[in-house]
Length: 196
Image 1 (cartoon, one colour):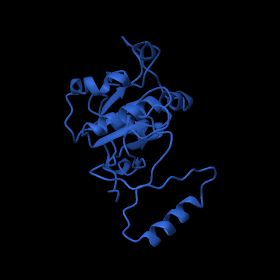
Image 2: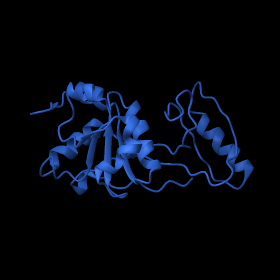
Image 3: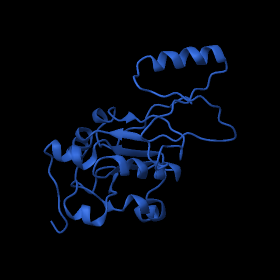
Image 4: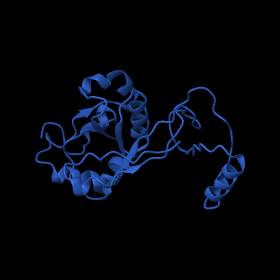
C-alpha cells in the first residue's frame, strides 16, 4: 500500500504540524492473542514483480532480529487502515500553543476506565470513554470524519485499539499517544483531576 503523507497533527501552529509520525499500515483484526491489538506489524507491498518483491522483503528484514516472516496474498477488498502516533512531547507542545484547552484544534479522549480517569488525566481531556465502548459511543464526540482525534490510555495499548476502532469507523485523523499516561507522568507534565 502506498502511504500518503500524514495529515497535520492536532496542534494549532504550522511549525508544530510536521511532527506526527504515521503508524505502520496494518490489516485489521489480524493480531496475535487479542486480535485487535497490534503487537506486531504488517508491511503491505504492492509490487507486480515477484523478484522485486523478494528483494524488497530481504532488504527490510535484514535490519530486524527475531522477526518471523509469513508471506501471503490478500484477496478481495481488504483495506489497510492507518492511524498516527504522537509523542507526549508533541501533545504537550500542541496543548501549550493552543489559545485555550477548549480551542486546541483536536478532540482528546482518555480511553481508560472511569476509576483510572479519577486518578488523574491529561489537562484538556474532552471525554473519558472506555476503549471497549468507543465503537458504540463514538457519536457522543460530535466529531466529523475529518476531525483530529487524539486517544490515550495508561500505556498506549488500549488507546491503540481505540485508534484502530475509530479508523475502522472512517475517522481519518486519529492519533495514539505513545506511552500514554505512563510517558506523560514520566515526562513530569501536569495532571488534572475531576472537579478542578
